Length: 511
Image (cartoon, rainbow, N blue to C red; front, side):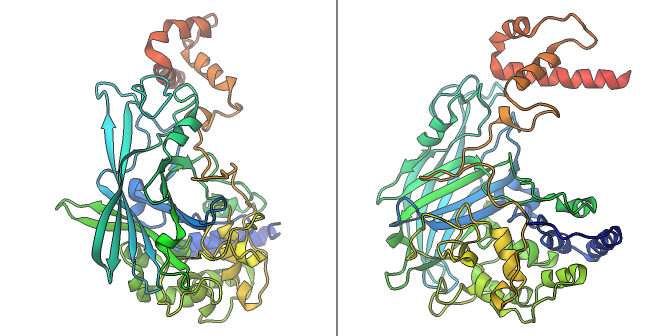
C-alpha cells in the first residue's frame, strides 16, 4: 500500500492539526495514527492511563480461532506485559503473583460469562543470594541452574447470571516457559517451550510463558506522524519485542452452548489484589483497538474496570466515532453517515449470518463461530477478503486486524471501498503449525544491538571491546579475558562487560 502523497504545506497542516488535537485531549493521537497506510495504533499495548503503569497486569491482545490442525478444538490466547525487551535482565519477565488472569466465555450471547478459566501464578527462587535469573546453561525446566521459575494453577469456574455455580481445579503447579535470556543461558529454547506444553484431563492443552509478540504494525506515528515524512512507513515496530502468553486449547463442545448455537464470545480480564485482600479488575480486552481509538480518555480506565453487560454506557463512542471525523478533516475522505450501526454489528454484536448469536445483547466481545472450519489458505484481511474463518470472526494470529478494522471504520461494509492500511502485512516471525502456535520469543542475545552490528560474532566482539581498558592500545585479548573470567560463568561475563562499557563511556565524557 502506498502512502498518500502530500506537499510541504499539506504536511505542515497535518502537523498543526495533530498538535491542536493533542491539546484538545487524548484519543486523537491514536486516531490520527490510523489515517495513513503505515499509521497505526497497537492493540491494547498501554491503551489506558492507569494500566500503562502496571505492565504485569496489562492485557495486550486476545485471540480465538478454531485450531487449524485439530478442528474439533478451539484455541484461546491472551497476552500480557507489552514491549518486553529481550535483554531486560537481570529481573526478567514474570506473571504477577497477586493477580488473577481470566479468560471468559459467553456462550449464549447475553453479555455474561458462563465459563471462566482462571490462571494464577507462583514464583520460586532456588538461590536468593545471587542476582542471577539462571546460574548456568539451562537445559530443562527443572534444571537446577534455572534459578527463578514460575508455576500456575487453572480453575474452571461455571457461572449463571454472574453467580458461581461450580469451581474445578483443572491444572496444578504447571511449569511456565521462562524468559529467553539468550543462547549462552538457554542453548535450546525450543526444548524448554515444548516442556511447558501440558495436557489436561478431558482433551485440553495449556501453555504459559514468554512468546514473540504476535501483533504486527507500524507504531512510529506517535513521533508527530513520522516527522512529516509520510513515506517512512511499513516498519513493524513491535519486531523484536516479546510478551507473556497464556494459551488454552479446549474441545469446542466444552465451551459452546449446543451444536445449534456454536457462537461464543471471548474476553480476558486481570484482577489485582488490593491492600484489603480483595481482587479488583484493572484490565479488560476482547476486540482489538476498541479502548484505543473508540473510547476517549475519560472512559478508558472505566472500560478496563467494567464488564460487557455494562457496555451500554459506551455505545455512543461506537455509533458516533471520533476517528472518521478526523480522517475527513485531515484527508478529505468523507466520513460515513451516523449513527454507525455497521460498527455496532462488527464490534458489539457480531455480523448477522456469520458470528452474531441469536437474541444477542450488544457488548464488546471477540465473537467466534466455531462451526466455521479453518482454511488451508488464510487471508490476512479475513472476512473482508472472503475468508470467513478470520477476523472479525474471532482472531487468528496472522489476521491483519489493523488494516481490516480501519477499512471497516471508513465504511467498507457500507459500500465505501478502500484499501487503507499500515503496510505491515505479516509478523516478522513465522507462527507454529501446532499448539501453542505462537513464535518463540526473541532471545536476549539477539536483542537490539549497537548500531552497525548484525548479531552473532558481533555480540562477542562488543564484549571484547568493552572489557579492554579505556585508552589501551595493547590490552589483553578476548581469549585471555574470557578464560580469566570463566569461573564467573557466561552471565557474569556479560554483566561485567556491560558495566565496563558504561564506565568507559562515562570516563570518555568526563574528559
